[in-house]
Image 1 (cartoon, one colour):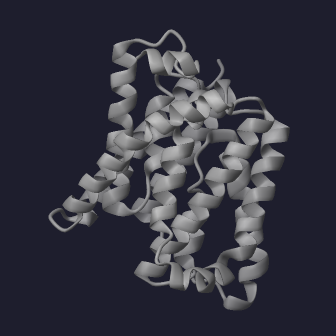
Image 2: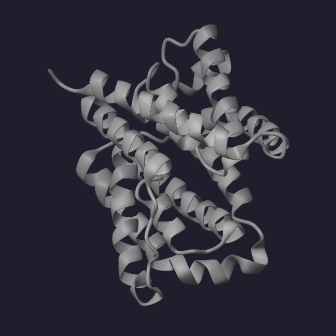
Length: 259
């Protein structure tokens, strides 16, 4: 516990808070191992219940970056995928940095409400949505717009799945291509989020050190999730996952709504 306290990322931390934080990253890693996404979403949703959103966002940087880099393989097809989503990644960077300068670090009622709305929207899409196909000729401009919107939401909430994931699925990249594209997009979003937090004074070397400590539980959870992937019904698991996100999101909106 002293290690985490020395980084001042879990102020007034207790063994119980440390245990909760580790458990959250194990769970988030497990979900990502099974369905290919969810680490930042689960982490932000659950950690925001016990700490400030900016602190939660700082903790997820290293686990998110490493797991997403791993997901961005195989390297031989990396450039081919990047050609399809390159302008989107530029938009993500611009939107995240601009959003960070405009909104500040994720904090307070605004971040809680935005996070809740993003979670509910993502869960609704996952349960009911059928994204349309995006014409190749429109990918450049539309990708940049989607990336910019994703970036602003990332700056406000620390979550970068909306509207990025529905858009990527609409590109019809195939199963492996979609997994790789999400890995690339999430990696870029993680780096941009770290830059935004740093610009707002929310991501110091101390915060990076605490984030490194959360890498091991995240990787352990991801390994377990990958092992379970072939044994569980991914469809059933994802259904439960989306319903849980919707409930967590609704709770965040109610808790954060000023009144």
